[in-house]
Image (cartoon, rainbow, N blue to C red):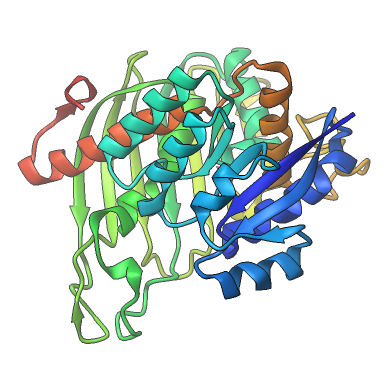
Length: 367
């Protein structure tokens, strides 16, 4: 086993999750590369030192540039605001350092394109943080579809709905301003990634992007609260996607339903350890969706727990990401989802905004 020095930029919500994942991944998956928490950078020297002490890093950085340049930092994790992603990634790749970047890949489509070009030109391992598609249940759903268990897919419905911004009287925050911080920029990428992973590339989009609460705590909001899209996939399947940050009662409504010629699949992230499967078999009177509880027979479950039905959680998804990132670095073989996947998702988001503005179908070839 060899050590690898990890530099983490951002110590908040996702920063903590990645710090914990890098601390645990070696024990969970017995990885050949063992992370060393070398350096962390927050928004100020004071917050950097606070995160260092809390998460167990060896050193705190005064700024992200010094972290990227440090010779003891072998790989970089970007968990800072979207507006910082491009500069950090480009500087890291210029120094031949692998990069894991939280979604969305960039602040804009141009950012995502530049970051992907730099990643591929560098030859370095690169991944983007689409964690929800990595649950054992969703991994198994992909297996069921690819094996033909539900026949030929005919339709897909997906949503990512939450209610964290449902109260329009609460004080405005950074989430109220700028297209990249709206629902299409923030929540939509996860379900667009799921649709692509489960069904295939999206080729056309017809979208309606909406600002429901134009005033937030007395200030004018400048971005969207919810959006819906009709989509066409490369393989001929059609579908519908819905995203909302004001869906009262929904806490983690990352959910999908897939219809096929021989059956159907349903999943809801609020019950992430269960997958619902319908198959057109047996007497009609006995047919119906049956609940499959995840266990050691499902992808990536056994490393966490030997007991069927005991379940995995959110943090475990990030540990799986850490395993894959380390594997990509060790082997030199790309592990999905790379920056290229992040770019393809950004293209769909850009097409959705243009479609909503023009009230027309948009082809992904234009983005």
